[in-house]
Amino acid sequence: MTSGSKSMPDYQLCLADWRARVHANNAQVERLTERDDGNDFYAPIAERFRADPTRRDDVCLNALLALAHPQEVWLDVGAGGGRFALALARHVQRVIAVEPSEAMRTVLEEVRAQHGIENLNLIGERWPLQRALQADVALITHVGYDIEAIGPFLDAFEAAAKRLCVALLLERAPGAAFAGLWKAVHGSPYAPLPALPEFLRLLEARGRRPALRKITERAWGFDSWEAAINDARRRLWLRPGSAKERLLRQIIVDHLVARDDGYALKGPADTIVLVTWTPS
Image (cartoon, rainbow, N blue to C red):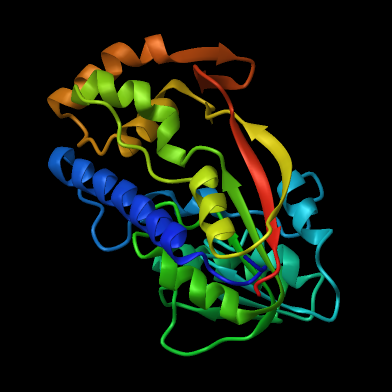
């Protein structure tokens, strides 16, 4: 198989596996959910994605900046509150940021206005778009885990990139760190979303040769006991004051470890990996 060509049977199997994992997770959430976040899932936590675009101590951002060329246009799919898009805009010619969440876009616009960043075009739609975009580099950061139709997503993502495709991904999808609490509260094993291993298999079945670089490890930390409760409640889709939320409050002590700046979930830290590949 030459680089750039799909091994169709393998690729179809990878797509089916990805789709099945996302479907199983969605079905589990639908069956057990107590919470309704309305139309904007990220509205309750959008403020967490506010970041100073001039920061220098972010190892993930620094890894992205090392790939950036001043004359380039970057596309950030799922830009969130702009924590990477706005910082990149200070170092490249232009950034196109695609973000469907209104709450996230509000945060991005506020940070952009605060820092006077004008070379960013914000598109409030879901990817893939109904029209073609072109950039030198296409970027996703912790995006894709829950996208069932990952094939069309990647087709459009690669088609938009002239030089490079870039992804920052976790080895385990974010909810996996809460699997122990999920089973204890809901009484059934957590159905994990696909993450880095499945993504790499997809790329390789597409005929790509991704390069990997481990960037950092991240433990799920909380600055207070109540912050831990709130985050776990959201990850477990619990309604405040419900019987399951009361159970969560009783048992969470067995799943947390104290540290100098608050608390962290017991268990292994999550590894963040930078993946780069040539789109074709």
